[in-house]
Amino acid sequence: MQIETFKLFCDLVDTGSFSDTAERNQITQSAVSQRIKALEDQYQVLLIERGRKNFAVTAEGHALLSTARDMIDLYDSIDVNLRALQNKVEGALTISTVYSIGFHELPPVLEIYRKRFPDVTPHLQYRRANQVYADVLASKADVGLVAYPQARKGVEIEIVWKDKLVMICPAGHELAEHRTIELKQLDGQRFISFEPDLPTRKALDTMLQQAGVQVNEVMDFDNIETVKRGVQIEQAISIVPQDTVKAEIENGSLIQIDIEAIDVWRPLGVVRRRSKAITPAMREFITLLKQQGLGGNE
Image (cartoon, rainbow, N blue to C red; front, side):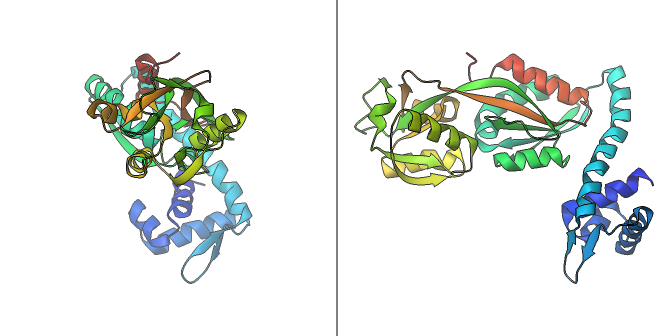
């Protein structure tokens, strides 16, 4: 069975549409249907449950999907390995990143990377943490960037730097005059948080619980920009990565206060698909992340 057919099947699952798959591969919709049917006949299983408007992937289809992605990765690695021998740093580099890293820590690294490797075209996708892992597993991204990286099946994780967590509040807040603060002083304070499923929120919840602190959560958001805005509007406090509030600290719209006697370093890591060959562009990007030591390593 040709590798193109496996790729066609993966595209069909990703797009959820025969017509979109046909357009992506520049063939007819009928050709897509025929090749998927041939794949089913080859293995004598039903891969897709077809309906009028959409379809569902069967258990056999999901099993084939995982193996098909691995085979495509192995096939692509032939070209990657040959290019690696020539050490050509070129081509596309798709990076899936959580908002806080993509908006704040990553830009200075990308600026250096683009100057150093002008033949590489980086493409950024701003996502929630669970979507970053999904992008990497589905080969929709070459690398992913997440906070508090967690081991997951099918991916390799490498912590490349850490950033510091600090408390923030608006100027004029009752805690604004403090230079440092203990967690117990946050008890009962109006608090702007991240949404419950985000890794940083889970780490903060654990941190506060271990300190016996119960904050008054006013609202939660899914990204750092709205958290900061919520702190300003609600005259509340929050705990955020230090590098994400540099502009607000400089212009005086927010006050930064160091937190005493806790582990205030948030690990940030690179995620990549285990079966995917590392291209020279990926290798140099990961190396640069380590060299820059974003967020100030301990």
